[in-house]
Length: 315
Image 1: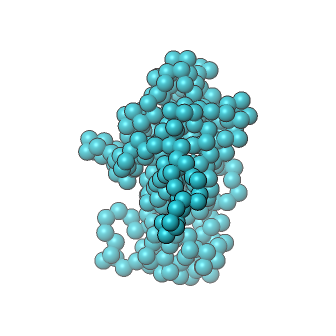
Image 2: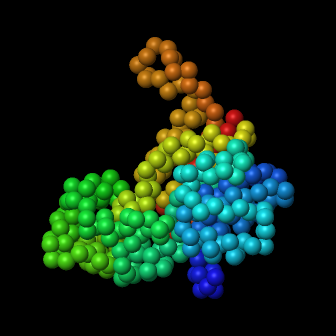
Image 3: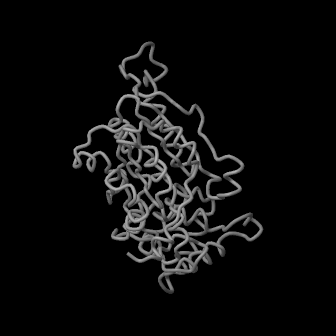
């Protein structure tokens, strides 16, 4: 393994103490980190385990290769799985595991992915458009930007980026595409900047929402997220906890809705005179409101600014 990969795949775990407290770790339990990344959360979970095990998922081969090396001191206490966390139930079944005592998901993009120019995630570097978390995936940002219709691109920017200038940006993309393909992040940033009046730019890059929207499309981040969360609740043992960190309102809305549904005794239409659904809650809310980063953490890690942590417990 290249030493540079090990060194570069760093990660400052967001709300680390809050996550550990939320998981309420049983030293002999089985835990899952569904988004291994740089291993910051995983390492601390492993430190808290005695006879227990951690199953660490990531679909990014770079994450697994680097973090395996960094966590080798824990030996067979940790099992690494190259897979999307959305396939967690099936992958765990293959390992002979039907129930676990806790699951952690950090739905943010890893610092390594953002800070490595050739991964094509960031508007801060000029590199080939890519944005694939799984480098073996067929669809990249290049195909989305150059092959999708204007209607599809507008939908993506509106729905996934909540970008109010979506039509204007897509219009500029189409103009550029008529001349040549859009090949780099730098070209895309310039196109977005040309579509938004400078007086409305504000703080940060005006390309942020566009890049977020395209990244979500490339990686299917919202596709089946609700179903995956429901499956995770199903595989929790009684007393087991699920902790999820989100970084934008679209993810958080899905997590909030699923948690609320699973924590409700009746989900009937309120206009009905009595309950006909027979739905029974199987979780309780540990966090009544989402936890956010402390002032100290915000000073040390600006990427925690939009993070929200929600935790539930199986009953």
